[in-house]
Image (cartoon, rainbow, N blue to C red; front, side, top):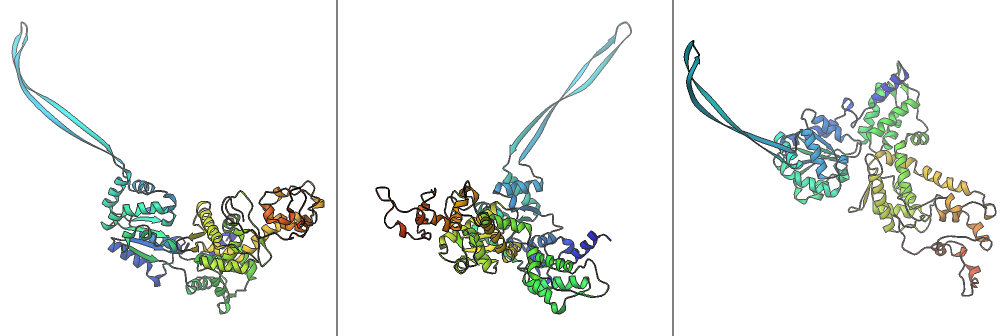
Length: 521
């Protein structure tokens, strides 16, 4: 057997809900399938199926509707109500144009008679009847609105309509869609929307009249017992022994209630023990070095998301550096990510929790509450518009709550955030390590580093000692933050008498700060 085939066998042992139906786990104790089937029998409501990413929502619905010829659409491809109805029309095979025609026929009969003669031979007579028909055909063509055609087709077919990732659809278009579905739902057309938990009630939120007309089905996070079941069944299939369940419990604790993470952990624990197929004699599993094990498990996709959120939106000016209690120097986006990670991270974090965590990790002068909320909004926008797939974070400004939708990203924040931010800071420190103004000839500091103020803070001693010998050019705004480098000037052009006593630390900028495009952090 090839090494690839052996690994495939090991990988197939650890299966969970959310994977293809061949490994589908119905979580029978929750009666999820039965609840979907009950809805299909009763109808006259919208069924909202909600659950965290990769917990088996879509697989559950597909498994129940496998014989129902349901019409499936993806919220990620729906930017407007028109997009939805175009997709429904395509699925049903209906056309927006129709043509009708009718034909009328008139018939006229007449009798004819006469003689037929052949000269010099004979004569004969002829009589007959002729039928003459007049046919008239009329055709009328007309175009129907695509929504009208799709709605009529859906009502006639009574096929279930499923909108996956309903939360991807813009809120204003959600309202238009729900209103257009209302009468179809009342007529008995099954409509199922699938969303993440904090968006489960979007249907009611956008259309108050749907209150009482929406049935909620929550998939929910996996319990520790369910996660442990993945490990127990998998290890048993490979004839492996986990003494006291120590390894299994540690993996479950770090899985953020995600069966996919648990499955990945189990597979890699087995590989770390150099096991590739079922053991003839029972073998005891050995714990790996946990920190290294978990750091290696962080996915490349999560790192990409982290880097984009840490970078934040493009801005016209540099952001203010923030020094954390662990010694890292970051901007406000790095500080907010560290604060989120400081909470555990929790997969649902209130604005107040983030603000409290910020006060715990920032050395001094933590960002104001308004700044934090603005950054959370910007991060949510980046995750929604610039990253593929499920947004890793989603800030609900109405509920003032940040949701970490992707368990892989939560895991990354727990195990890799500080290391990645340290790399960003070290790359800047390495560039200027050991340098003073005496040996910086020919170096444009403003181009060499992403944060002008961070560079000034790194070279502060040298800048201060040499301020009389060097011309330091900067924006006017820096004269406020770094007063000791720009002594006050009297009317005669000479430094004022208190210039020599100017404080040697950056003055606190009391002006309103902005974290978005055009702001200074």
